[in-house]
Length: 304
Image (cartoon, rainbow, N blue to C red; front, side, top):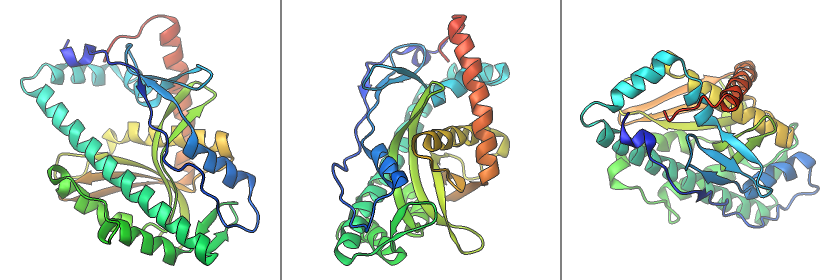
């Protein structure tokens, strides 16, 4: 087995969301809004030192990583293929390069959304530009959000791109510019069934009918110049379904749709996920959780 599959790393403290106290100039707060805001301050400690990644909350309760659950419960042929690939010459370097690009692109998207969110909140507070919708969530006006995103991407508050991944980040910019509202970016999610992870974004996007819908998003990078085949998207769909279930348990909020946003050098692949698909993927993931927990009880986990 390849060395990188066996590497143990020290526990890592998940960096807290930088929003300390953001006072929203709203006529009245809602429970859902407050619960959603609480996710900005949620802190979990990540531990990669064992056979799989775990998270622990402030009370030391342990949650298994969403991605670890998916990896360990993958079909045998998928695990075998990964191990074979890991033994190929140059696979370690290829993996490390892909990871560094993925990390840089995720960081860019996170910084854009967080910077734009702060700008939008401050502007909406000054102008009393808040609206609360039927889902109980408050949003700055779309005009304010568009201004904030343009500023964070192109203006005086521009987030700088890393040269090594600039081809990827330039392709995601038009999508980011078209976001209708920003609720959360890079936030922790844990679920009482025993799993946890970090979700990339909760935003409003425009549906085919021209209406804004609450959307839970997972950003991915892909090194090829063609769309990733649907059969290789299944784990991504289960992952986003898991995050949506955690969101609902924590806040009572369900996304209207999901998005797996795959960023390539030469464009984007957008895999939209309907509300029903999200619920179905969340249910399927819970079956994976039960399977994984049984593997833990039977001491059947190996590094993969």
